[in-house]
Length: 345
Image 1 (tube, one colour):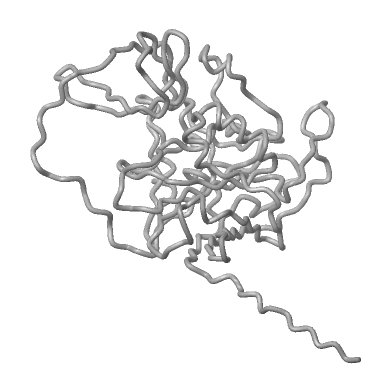
Image 2 (cartoon, one colour):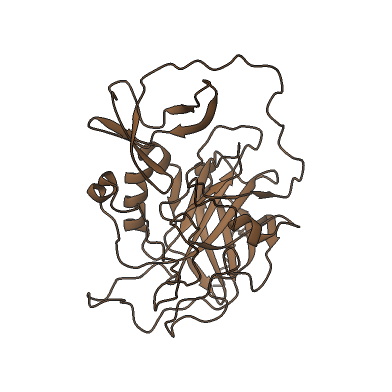
């Protein structure tokens, strides 16, 4: 008997958007040099292409670098025992921030802890996807730093598929509220992956250390497992390459941090839809009046500020304002954690 079996055709993923990035610019604001260990090669952190595909009830994010993605010969960086790296990516962190509604300022402005970058004023992400060697531990640090509400919109992809220079993450479309659209905007950042944990909650609350979800350091001089070329201060980005719209200068973008004020470098989003988002209303608004509890600064660590004062009615993800002497708003903050006798914003 000849048995004929019909198999259902499987639809191929459909490309929704793709963007190319310049080669040879994994130098941050232009001064960064690679770590000194022989495991690193030219192109390891050089973002070359980013693409988005619709795949049924999932979204595929495809990132191509300048060098093959490979497992290092030694998976430890200190005298500690060998680290279990099983996610298909080893040397890099790749953060993908997605703005699914460019007309809305709702969303989040904080980046993954330790990256030391921010976004252009008024721009927010609604969901983020992180490709990293240790997704579980990085997720725990991010949740503790950003709070559970914001961290619920961050997906630490597991089971990454790697082919040569390209890594692909499969993410449930439900994270974004549905399948990808051509009008979505993206911000893609590449940093080095640190393998050992470098922060604790108590350290952060004391202000002795900066929250860091396994981001490799950038120091004045390169070390085996740290980039070199850092300027003075501690607000320079640890992101070494970003996806930028045509005509943007990465040296200027990643060099837009300010040591004196502590302002981080601001990174734009890219989109196939080049129509700029609607500007804020120019209608006259009443002069803001101080309201709500007033708190004082206990310490500043990067873009995290510890405030002391009455916190009984303050909640995570609540927004606040910093008022100047004339009562005008000079900055905005968002609460990431409520602690005894104060908050972290």
